Length: 231
Image (cartoon, rainbow, N blue to C red; front, side, top):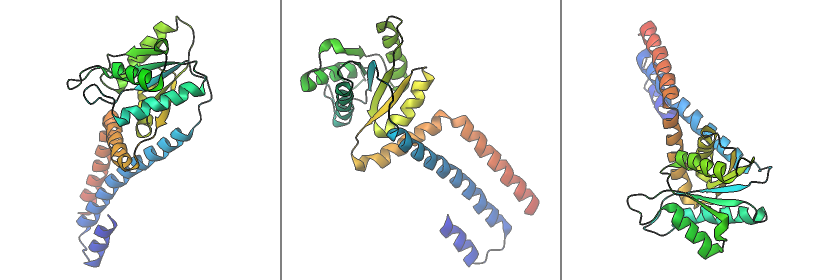
Protein backbone atom coordinates (compact mmCIF):
# COMPACT_ATOMS: atom_id res chain seq x y z
CA UNK A 1 0.00 0.00 0.00
CA UNK A 2 2.79 2.43 0.89
CA UNK A 3 4.81 1.61 -2.23
CA UNK A 4 1.72 2.20 -4.35
CA UNK A 5 1.13 5.62 -2.83
CA UNK A 6 4.80 6.63 -3.13
CA UNK A 7 4.59 5.62 -6.78
CA UNK A 8 1.49 7.78 -7.27
CA UNK A 9 3.26 10.79 -5.72
CA UNK A 10 6.59 10.11 -7.47
CA UNK A 11 5.12 10.16 -10.95
CA UNK A 12 3.09 13.23 -9.92
CA UNK A 13 -0.34 11.92 -10.76
CA UNK A 14 -2.60 14.89 -10.18
CA UNK A 15 -5.82 13.16 -11.14
CA UNK A 16 -7.77 13.03 -7.87
CA UNK A 17 -9.44 9.80 -9.02
CA UNK A 18 -6.26 7.80 -8.36
CA UNK A 19 -5.84 9.33 -4.90
CA UNK A 20 -9.41 8.46 -3.99
CA UNK A 21 -8.94 4.97 -5.40
CA UNK A 22 -5.89 4.53 -3.19
CA UNK A 23 -7.85 5.84 -0.20
CA UNK A 24 -10.59 3.28 -0.90
CA UNK A 25 -8.08 0.41 -1.10
CA UNK A 26 -6.40 1.69 2.05
CA UNK A 27 -9.69 1.70 3.99
CA UNK A 28 -10.53 -1.87 2.95
CA UNK A 29 -7.01 -3.10 3.65
CA UNK A 30 -6.81 -1.16 6.91
CA UNK A 31 -10.14 -2.54 8.15
CA UNK A 32 -9.06 -6.11 7.39
CA UNK A 33 -5.68 -5.68 9.07
CA UNK A 34 -7.34 -4.05 12.09
CA UNK A 35 -9.55 -7.12 12.46
CA UNK A 36 -6.62 -9.51 12.00
CA UNK A 37 -4.46 -7.68 14.54
CA UNK A 38 -7.32 -7.48 17.04
CA UNK A 39 -8.06 -11.20 16.76
CA UNK A 40 -4.36 -12.04 17.10
CA UNK A 41 -3.99 -9.81 20.18
CA UNK A 42 -7.14 -11.10 21.85
CA UNK A 43 -6.29 -14.71 21.06
CA UNK A 44 -2.88 -14.25 22.68
CA UNK A 45 -4.40 -12.68 25.79
CA UNK A 46 -7.02 -15.42 25.97
CA UNK A 47 -4.34 -18.09 25.68
CA UNK A 48 -2.44 -16.74 28.71
CA UNK A 49 -5.49 -16.04 30.87
CA UNK A 50 -5.46 -18.55 33.77
CA UNK A 51 -8.50 -20.68 34.57
CA UNK A 52 -9.71 -19.86 38.07
CA UNK A 53 -12.02 -22.79 38.73
CA UNK A 54 -11.84 -26.56 38.97
CA UNK A 55 -13.62 -28.23 36.05
CA UNK A 56 -15.84 -31.28 36.35
CA UNK A 57 -15.41 -32.12 32.66
CA UNK A 58 -12.63 -31.77 30.09
CA UNK A 59 -13.85 -31.70 26.48
CA UNK A 60 -11.34 -32.70 23.81
CA UNK A 61 -12.31 -31.46 20.35
CA UNK A 62 -11.67 -33.78 17.42
CA UNK A 63 -9.63 -32.74 14.38
CA UNK A 64 -9.78 -35.70 12.01
CA UNK A 65 -8.18 -39.14 11.80
CA UNK A 66 -5.87 -40.89 9.38
CA UNK A 67 -7.92 -44.02 8.76
CA UNK A 68 -8.39 -45.16 12.34
CA UNK A 69 -5.22 -43.58 13.74
CA UNK A 70 -4.88 -40.44 15.83
CA UNK A 71 -2.58 -38.01 13.95
CA UNK A 72 -0.04 -35.77 15.75
CA UNK A 73 -2.33 -32.70 15.74
CA UNK A 74 -5.09 -34.57 17.56
CA UNK A 75 -2.60 -36.39 19.78
CA UNK A 76 -1.36 -33.03 21.06
CA UNK A 77 -4.91 -32.17 22.16
CA UNK A 78 -5.33 -35.49 23.94
CA UNK A 79 -1.92 -35.17 25.63
CA UNK A 80 -2.87 -31.71 26.89
CA UNK A 81 -6.22 -33.01 28.15
CA UNK A 82 -4.37 -35.66 30.17
CA UNK A 83 -2.12 -32.96 31.65
CA UNK A 84 -5.23 -31.07 32.75
CA UNK A 85 -6.77 -34.30 34.08
CA UNK A 86 -3.69 -34.90 36.24
CA UNK A 87 -3.50 -31.23 37.26
CA UNK A 88 -6.98 -31.45 38.75
CA UNK A 89 -6.11 -34.65 40.63
CA UNK A 90 -7.83 -36.97 38.13
CA UNK A 91 -11.26 -35.79 39.24
CA UNK A 92 -12.75 -34.48 35.95
CA UNK A 93 -14.34 -36.71 33.34
CA UNK A 94 -12.82 -36.50 29.86
CA UNK A 95 -15.26 -36.10 26.96
CA UNK A 96 -13.82 -37.10 23.59
CA UNK A 97 -15.82 -35.31 20.91
CA UNK A 98 -15.89 -36.11 17.19
CA UNK A 99 -17.98 -38.07 14.71
CA UNK A 100 -16.94 -40.28 11.81
CA UNK A 101 -15.97 -38.71 8.49
CA UNK A 102 -16.42 -40.33 5.10
CA UNK A 103 -12.71 -41.19 4.90
CA UNK A 104 -12.44 -42.46 8.48
CA UNK A 105 -12.76 -46.11 9.52
CA UNK A 106 -14.06 -45.28 13.01
CA UNK A 107 -15.43 -42.23 14.77
CA UNK A 108 -12.91 -39.71 16.06
CA UNK A 109 -14.29 -40.18 19.56
CA UNK A 110 -13.67 -43.94 19.47
CA UNK A 111 -10.06 -43.51 18.27
CA UNK A 112 -9.48 -40.77 20.85
CA UNK A 113 -10.76 -42.99 23.64
CA UNK A 114 -8.47 -45.83 22.52
CA UNK A 115 -5.52 -43.43 22.49
CA UNK A 116 -6.25 -42.28 26.04
CA UNK A 117 -6.54 -45.85 27.26
CA UNK A 118 -3.56 -47.33 25.42
CA UNK A 119 -1.10 -44.43 25.65
CA UNK A 120 -2.07 -42.76 28.93
CA UNK A 121 -3.90 -45.61 30.70
CA UNK A 122 -6.90 -43.47 31.57
CA UNK A 123 -9.67 -45.55 33.22
CA UNK A 124 -12.54 -46.33 30.88
CA UNK A 125 -15.13 -45.04 33.34
CA UNK A 126 -13.50 -41.58 33.27
CA UNK A 127 -14.01 -41.21 29.49
CA UNK A 128 -17.31 -40.13 27.94
CA UNK A 129 -17.90 -40.42 24.19
CA UNK A 130 -19.59 -37.85 21.95
CA UNK A 131 -19.49 -39.36 18.45
CA UNK A 132 -22.15 -37.43 16.50
CA UNK A 133 -20.49 -34.07 15.82
CA UNK A 134 -19.13 -33.01 12.46
CA UNK A 135 -17.74 -29.56 13.37
CA UNK A 136 -16.73 -27.39 16.33
CA UNK A 137 -20.20 -25.97 16.85
CA UNK A 138 -21.67 -29.46 17.15
CA UNK A 139 -18.76 -30.50 19.40
CA UNK A 140 -19.95 -27.92 21.90
CA UNK A 141 -23.68 -28.54 21.55
CA UNK A 142 -23.54 -32.33 21.81
CA UNK A 143 -20.91 -32.30 24.58
CA UNK A 144 -23.15 -30.00 26.61
CA UNK A 145 -26.02 -32.44 26.18
CA UNK A 146 -23.83 -35.27 27.51
CA UNK A 147 -22.74 -33.20 30.52
CA UNK A 148 -26.30 -32.11 31.28
CA UNK A 149 -27.38 -35.74 31.30
CA UNK A 150 -24.35 -37.08 33.13
CA UNK A 151 -24.44 -34.45 35.90
CA UNK A 152 -28.08 -35.30 36.78
CA UNK A 153 -29.01 -31.66 37.21
CA UNK A 154 -26.07 -30.77 39.45
CA UNK A 155 -24.20 -27.57 38.50
CA UNK A 156 -20.92 -28.23 36.76
CA UNK A 157 -18.00 -26.40 35.13
CA UNK A 158 -15.96 -27.52 32.16
CA UNK A 159 -12.97 -26.69 30.02
CA UNK A 160 -12.28 -27.63 26.41
CA UNK A 161 -8.97 -28.53 24.82
CA UNK A 162 -8.01 -27.77 21.25
CA UNK A 163 -4.90 -26.49 19.47
CA UNK A 164 -3.76 -23.02 20.51
CA UNK A 165 -4.64 -21.40 17.17
CA UNK A 166 -8.23 -22.70 17.44
CA UNK A 167 -9.04 -21.72 21.05
CA UNK A 168 -10.50 -18.29 20.33
CA UNK A 169 -12.99 -19.37 17.65
CA UNK A 170 -13.90 -22.47 19.65
CA UNK A 171 -14.68 -20.26 22.65
CA UNK A 172 -17.18 -18.32 20.52
CA UNK A 173 -18.95 -21.57 19.62
CA UNK A 174 -18.94 -22.55 23.31
CA UNK A 175 -20.66 -19.30 24.20
CA UNK A 176 -23.21 -19.79 21.40
CA UNK A 177 -23.98 -23.24 22.83
CA UNK A 178 -24.52 -21.67 26.29
CA UNK A 179 -21.64 -23.79 27.52
CA UNK A 180 -19.84 -22.52 30.62
CA UNK A 181 -16.33 -23.46 29.53
CA UNK A 182 -12.91 -21.88 29.08
CA UNK A 183 -10.40 -23.09 26.51
CA UNK A 184 -6.94 -24.62 26.84
CA UNK A 185 -4.60 -24.60 23.84
CA UNK A 186 -2.27 -27.48 23.07
CA UNK A 187 1.06 -26.89 21.37
CA UNK A 188 1.22 -26.72 17.58
CA UNK A 189 4.27 -26.96 15.35
CA UNK A 190 5.54 -23.40 14.87
CA UNK A 191 5.70 -23.62 11.07
CA UNK A 192 2.01 -24.58 10.94
CA UNK A 193 0.66 -21.73 13.13
CA UNK A 194 0.62 -18.83 10.59
CA UNK A 195 -1.32 -20.82 8.01
CA UNK A 196 -3.66 -22.32 10.61
CA UNK A 197 -4.33 -18.99 12.30
CA UNK A 198 -5.07 -17.32 8.97
CA UNK A 199 -7.64 -20.02 8.22
CA UNK A 200 -9.14 -19.42 11.66
CA UNK A 201 -9.35 -15.71 10.87
CA UNK A 202 -11.14 -16.43 7.60
CA UNK A 203 -13.50 -18.67 9.55
CA UNK A 204 -14.27 -15.77 11.89
CA UNK A 205 -14.92 -13.49 8.93
CA UNK A 206 -17.43 -16.00 7.60
CA UNK A 207 -19.11 -16.27 11.02
CA UNK A 208 -19.81 -12.53 11.01
CA UNK A 209 -19.93 -12.04 7.25
CA UNK A 210 -23.00 -9.78 7.19
CA UNK A 211 -21.38 -7.36 9.64
CA UNK A 212 -18.32 -7.12 7.41
CA UNK A 213 -20.42 -6.84 4.25
CA UNK A 214 -22.26 -3.92 5.86
CA UNK A 215 -18.98 -2.16 6.72
CA UNK A 216 -17.72 -2.78 3.19
CA UNK A 217 -20.88 -1.22 1.71
CA UNK A 218 -20.61 1.80 4.02
CA UNK A 219 -16.97 2.36 2.95
CA UNK A 220 -17.95 1.95 -0.70
CA UNK A 221 -20.80 4.45 -0.32
CA UNK A 222 -18.50 6.94 1.40
CA UNK A 223 -15.89 6.67 -1.36
CA UNK A 224 -18.64 6.93 -3.97
CA UNK A 225 -19.71 10.23 -2.44
CA UNK A 226 -16.09 11.46 -2.58
CA UNK A 227 -15.84 10.51 -6.25
CA UNK A 228 -19.08 12.32 -6.96
CA UNK A 229 -17.84 15.44 -5.17
CA UNK A 230 -14.30 15.64 -6.55
CA UNK A 231 -14.21 13.82 -9.89
